[in-house]
Image (cartoon, rainbow, N blue to C red; front, side, top):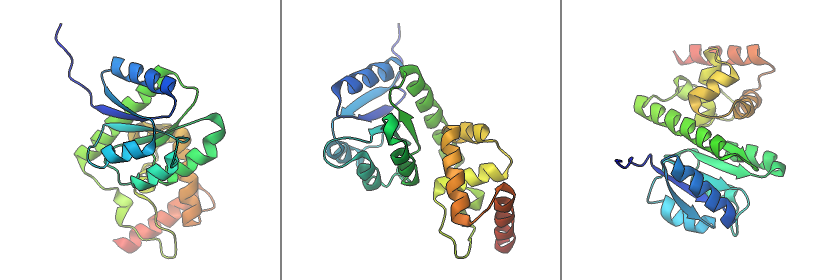
Length: 211
């Protein structure tokens, strides 16, 4: 039987050998190549010179935390999706990670099939956006006196303004509806919107000024 070509490399960062072994086995079975790291320093030395298809990064690792590593990689601009792996008590931390550029977070304990599905979706969505090479329509909008939106927040805002539901927006961007909700709440806070209608009004006003 002919060998299937690799679907790309996944970098896995976790200090638990059992987690690394499990993820490695599941992802290899799905056609990915897997490179495992026990700490963030080892990841940084490779990830700065070599881009994987995606990174799975545990929040709690020896030395610098997963959040510190995410910031050093400049997650928002890193050329591959980065998922944070977090325990059930780390959800607030994981939401903070999204604000620092993580694409999404995966909660422990997890099922192998769920991780493969989430990665497939995220990598596919990321590749489509790269191929379209389209910066969000709202990328050049200015909201005077307001904190600027991150690139991913602009992407979520574009989905929201086009009438997409959280589920539809999540499918398009390769992230979970729950993460879409987190982004949406952050966008509303940054732009000072009281509700959904107010948010659309702010966006339309900014668009008219820009045209």
